[in-house]
Amino acid sequence: MKNALLLLGITLIVTLSGPKVMGQTATNNLSLGMPEVLLVKSNASSINLTLSPQEAGLAVQPSLSDSTARVLISSVVSGEQTRTLTASVTSGSVPAGTYLKLVALSPNASFVGTAGTLGAQVELGAVAQTIVSAIGTCYSGTAADDGYGLKYTFGIPAASGTYGSIRATAGAAVTVTLTLSAGS
Image 1: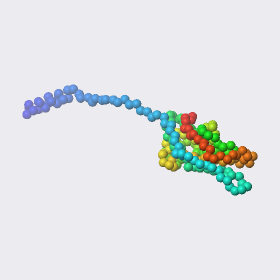
Image 2: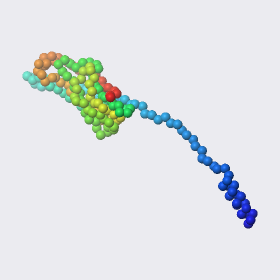
Image 3: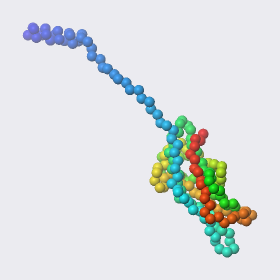
Image 4: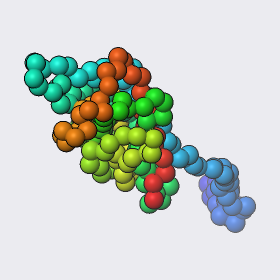
């Protein structure tokens, strides 16, 4: 019994005074990032806006609108930066004596993030016009009814003095380019 107690005592002394086991560590250095994202796409392939005659003695239909086009976007901004969505006629020209106007409509509930501020209806020409400003980090979705609705209106000015400059035009091709760019 004395030997057993002696052995237990020696084992206890060696264990308590022996080398201490320490944990070891390893590290991983990671580089995390998110690039700025600036993507835009329209779902409209072709829109037909043709003013029709009404009846003898009356002017042609004063205007015609189409709201089937939608523009889809994905945006990731840096800091407090925002984006701007603009539109301009980049090919062809609006027939003489007529106008082509555009207004962006509110996106549906699928839109996630900062949708920005919708602008007023603008008359389109070669100079880009802002249709949505202050767009932040967001995405619109990709379904047929996602994104901003686009309402195009083709018509003749209300002033009768310009009516004489209208000329018959069959299918004048006009390309409207939508640009998503860095705002302020």
